[in-house]
Image 1: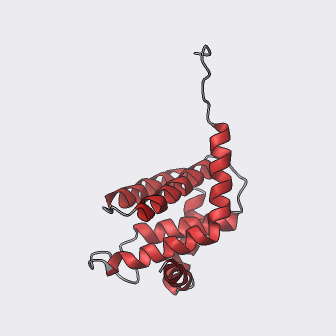
Image 2: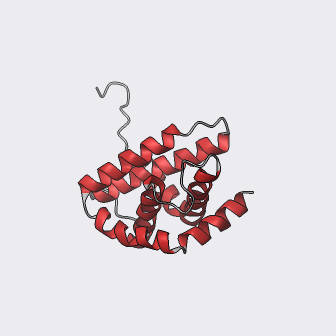
Length: 149
């Protein structure tokens, strides 16, 4: 089932609609205010989804990590990722938050399948970049030791 989702996401990533979002991603990536609005909207869309499946929770966590990577890239604190990867990721977020998709989100179940497929493909294709960022993020967090506060 996961491979089917990944393959469908790969096909969506080649669609004319996604290519339009990829073109818009370059204009969004260089503008912190637009990135902030995009991340806020994408976050809202992800937390609105109700699911008891642990796999869905894992996908949400990976996407939250990616969204933090976009924020860090946008503010210049993290640049150890290719611009192409960032553009594709931002295009996925634009697709996720857009009311214009191949299957409209208001159609029960089917409406979210294209979003889920594209996210599954993205996570599969860019897992190494996301994992590398998560390791960097963990290493940069300040964790006070006893007696340092």
